[in-house]
Length: 241
Image (tube, rainbow, N blue to C red; front, side, top):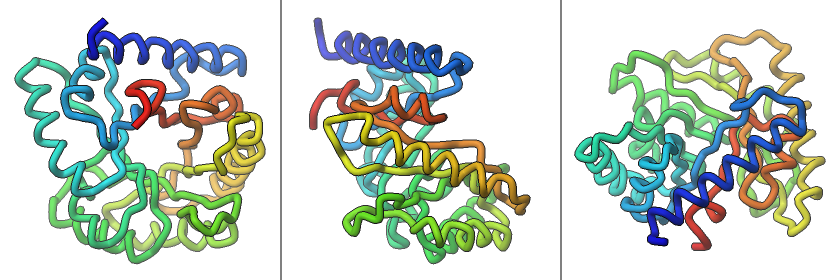
């Protein structure tokens, strides 16, 4: 089995896990979408995943994404493959916004108003036909080393979207503390869902909280059971980095 065949087989396994988790939770098939985490992954491997039917890819580093995006999109065009739908899932500072704003389908990792303002400024110069969709990352475990807003600060950051023209918040994202036991992620996933539901009940301009980005290779089943609409899987598709 060559590298492209291995990636295709891995994708099939991950899709089967998601489908089984959806069925076990009584959810509609396809209600949890797979984002293949392609940070540090070679363009050739992303193209292999595209050829195997994967569309959504998650990047974490602005300059790496800038450099790789052209190669992947050109390769897809030459090979008559669909263009990828890019997600930015890593921490985003104002000086990296220029690599991302208006160039990805979804930014998962908003945590500060200055970053929002810079995204707004950058997207406005591109004159987009649709707003830049974003998620707010929430630090539910209170880990000092993790990014994300504290739950108590979420409402204020959501309110910031009402003052913007070119951005829209479509949901929330979380990264729970890592554990070998997937069940230890469940309280964090459940808490994010409750927080999303509370805030979704409040009508605000440019806020439509449909998405929950949560779950990775080791705990995606638990995330789907708790309502994930986007699961971010890298290792189970492309192997350990």
